[in-house]
Length: 126
Image 1 (cartoon, helix red, strand yellow):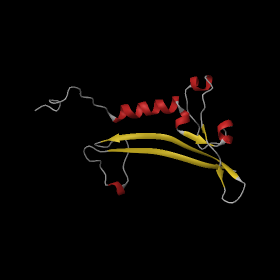
Image 2: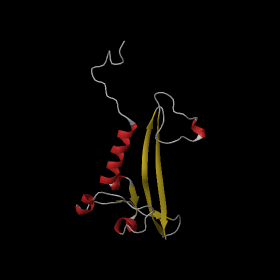
Image 3: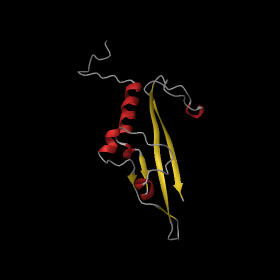
Image 4: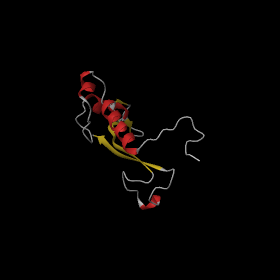
């Protein structure tokens, strides 16, 4: 019996293709992966990592950072500016070749499993 015997449509996707699409989305819509208060949103100099984007984003005046409220310090009127960035994302499907899993996750990936790896950078701005 064929694998697609009872299916009208069959689609196969490799992790390299998904990772390439993810990289393009991160470059064309950086505000989906960079969040910060007003200071880093208006002056993107005090950031963890440089935001890599395509020139068209800057030309269209699209935001590089999604603006959020500053973090309040409990029982004081003081707030802290911050930034959180998802700087690199990778998806790995079975058999697992895009990145190595930590020993706590019992590598290698089993059949019908996938792993997601994001690098996160966060900073408080004083």
